[in-house]
Image (cartoon, rainbow, N blue to C red):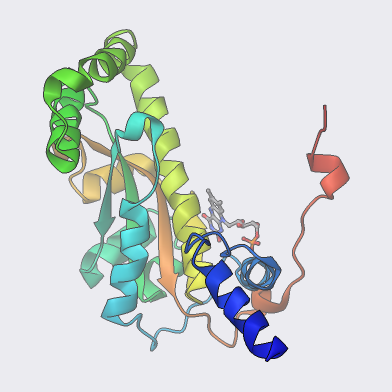
Length: 238
Ligand SMILES: Cc1cc2nc3c(=O)[nH]c(=O)nc-3n(C[C@H](O)[C@H](O)[C@H](O)COP(=O)(O)O)c2cc1C
């Protein structure tokens, strides 16, 4: 009887828990850290193993959900499917095999034409998505317009590039959680990538790239110890 009442009390207490409030309780936090220790920048991919479409879709969705300053999302992602283009990109990436050998290859691009138009478009998106009258968004919109108008194109390009790197972080963590291997890469000629993919005409610039797939058993880096400085070295408490 006592047992039954305790069970009932426990079940009732669950009703007040937000569904996400227990996501980072110790057991799952442990598994998140395990996954982050499991991941590594994969050097040799298994050329035979492909990421199933449904998993790829989920992974790409995490990119779309990435946060950005003001929420302006000054980015686009190019999924390079054509093997000939991937071979050309490999040449422009110092021959790094991950470009051609991984299951999938993504190019993270920043928008080079962030302007008042971008802001106007975004304000309309908010209004439509949330059913908010545009007049109520005037204050927020004007703040974004002031930001965009007050900056040089160079500043805005750098700013957009920083936003793109947030999406790379999202992708790397998401891939690790999904047990998909990844190699983030900056070792490539950005201008050549822009040229090969025709990005300039689309007002885009290749910032960083990522190979995705599954590690080959031959990749000795999979078992290499992580080299990270200590907490004492990297955290300051004030
Ligand atoms: C932005 C960025 C660019 C990188 N560029 C390359 C690259 O071009 N080629 C490569 O093999 N690894 C590249 N790496 C992988 C890093 O060398 C690797 O993440 C780092 O040494 C830490 O090791 P781990 O990721 O295996 O834990 C890059 C990583 C990041 C985050």
